[in-house]
Image (cartoon, rainbow, N blue to C red; front, side, top):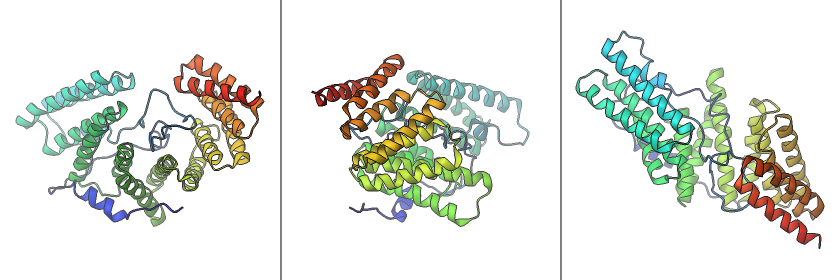
Length: 371
């Protein structure tokens, strides 16, 4: 069944509504190759309530990227600055870095407090005109982005939506183009949020906007090598997330198509032993299994396991569990029992609760099948 997709223009209108007059020089987004493109399967792109175990860090639900480097907001301007401005810049940088470190440690409350501290520090700097209006906006946008990701990490979707929109508004106020990778990145996160809220129309608009925008830029032939890699990276991530959304809505054939395309992009950039390739092969195996393509599913999951073993990856527990479920679908109870027992052993060692739960369910089904 074909999936109804709304027009690219409608999502552009949504983005346009965030912009105001008084455009300024755009800030520089972070490099995506080392951060965004190492897209982890920690993104809840579709929030499927049941099904194969996702290849994820079990404690995380968000991509580990920030759109705007501290250097972009605080140190990019090469013009001489006063000692007061330099001191304020250094102090702000330290507070923001402490917030990011707290987030990485899972200390979300502390991270948010530090973000509010950074915003409070801007008040006297604005009043005393220590920072220019441009620099104030740059720093504010960066802090909003950190706060948005904090909210997303904690599942506070309404708050994350608000903060991402504020971040997007700030980027556009600075003159960033609507098809910039940073704008597409936020649009992708908003699409995921809409999906989690059950707003399927806006979610689908968002995913389609991200994919079409990146495809248009790739086909234009005007990107330099670095920008092309970043753009391609974000295209792959968008396809990966959209496939998860389609899967959660039981559009299995379409999900298979987009996940296959995401894997093709990953293969063109990642090292052959990269864990992310293993994750994508496993995801594709799960989709094929749902479509009844059990032979292809088995081939893909075995490829995923080979990669994981070569890279000594902790997702091996997840892959054994998924392979066990595929074996159940093929009626191979003995093999299913073997792989799920291995998954259970690894999962207990790594304290992967979801894998432990599904591995036990798999073992129970395998036992019943062998009676």
